[in-house]
Image 1 (cartoon, rainbow, N blue to C red):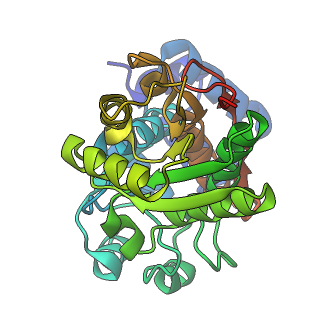
Image 2 (cartoon, rainbow, N blue to C red):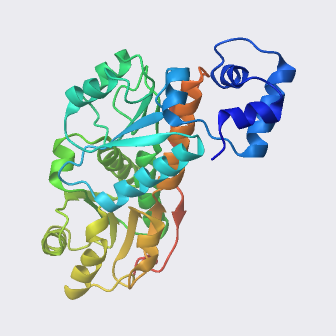
Image 3 (cartoon, one colour):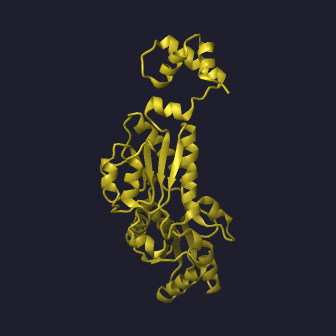
Length: 335
């Protein structure tokens, strides 16, 4: 293992000079700093995490706050988490994962210690009770999600409102006039979860703009619930020919349920979804979908946080535009 004394010997300086170059606690000449940095690169030296934290007054740990509430689809959430973790490691940071529903108390507990340097917060609600605390913390934060009033916060996410609109516009171009949104489980809407509400807003706005008849149906994440929703939709909207699905676990069961009820996809019913590409591509009928850019969102959230830690100004709002991919589940409406 390479030690600080090895770096000092290689650079022709004292170990304390190497320490000053790493910590910035005392000024050293640019020429000396460059020699030290060159020696570090050549020898592959990595400062001990504890010593580095003491030297810099940083822990080099980020908190990722993901309360695993009812109705959350954990596999998709973990895609975001993995992107955050891998990107943080590229910036020489570790990630502390907080999954308990502790609200403000949990944030305060972490922020009041030296455990973490900054926070990434997920599952943001439109009127999230954590926001006043996040605005007042002396540690930077980034939200993956947009509350109703994002002023004073740094937020990034897929533009879910535009995603809902994109699905409806795709169906409108194919001539569909009666459409439905099969959305997240009811408890997600009861909490006022921001991304779910934004999809409803986009779906409704695009349906109204195109003179379409539309309805929104929350759905529990089970095949039995998918069957019940399909039956209810056909009973209440017998002319239904287009469906938008924003509920990953019921995408395939819902297609199966409609076909068991006598509707062929896409011959009689066109289906679009907002979901990861791998899910849309893997089903018996590949589904036209707006991709969830979990890897990009997680990576960019960390990059925003690194800039904030360095004192660099960042945009308050970063909305990723939706990307819709046409697959086998959509077709022009039968005359």
